[in-house]
Amino acid sequence: MSVDYVIRHAAPTLAGMKTGNLFPCVFPSPQSMVQDLREINQVLVPRGLRLVPLRREQNRALLYLFRPAALSRDLSQGEVRRLLRQAGYQDLAQPACLRELKRRLQAGGDFPHEIGLFLGYPPEDVAGFMTHRGKHCKCVGCWKVYGDPGAAQQRFSAYKRCTANYCRRRARGASLEGLTVATRLPQ
Image (cartoon, rainbow, N blue to C red; front, side):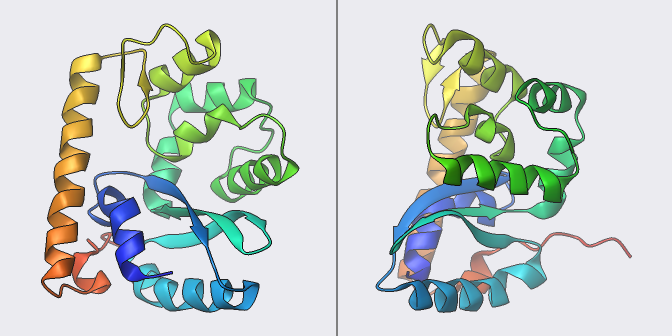
C-alpha cells in the first residue's frame, strides 16, 4: 500500500478535519499488510492518528484511519451514545466500541450502519439513515444527509478541496509526515 493511496483516501482525516476515514486495500500478502501498516503507523501514531484493519479477507483489508482523541470526543456525545446503545453496544468506551465494530464487520451480514459515528458523520444523519434504511435523504455526498443539507454540502466541498490539495502537495514531494496535522497532546 502506498502513501499516495492513504492520502487519496484519507486526506480530511490527515488534515484534522474529520475523525476517520474507511477504505479498502489489497496487499500482496498478509505479511506485507502488517509491514505496510507498521511503517505508516510509525509516522501517524506520534502525530495522534492510527491506521488499523477492521476486516481482513485473504489479501484484502478494510482499513480505518482515525484520530483516537477525536473519536473519544465523538463517542462521548449524548446522541452518539444513545445511537450506539440502540445498536446494541454495551460498553461505550472507545476501545470496546472499536472491538465491537470490528467484530460486526468480520461477522459479515448487514453492514453496521452505525459506522458513520466512527467517521465523524453527524449523528442526525446516521440516525436518519438507520431509520429510513437509506431512503428519503435530503442530499448525498460523502454520506446520505437527513439533517442540515447546507452544512453537509459545505463539509463535502471542504473534504474534496482538501483531498485535491493534499494530492497536489504529495505530487510535488510532500511527505506523509508533512501532510499530517499533529494532534495537540495534553501536557
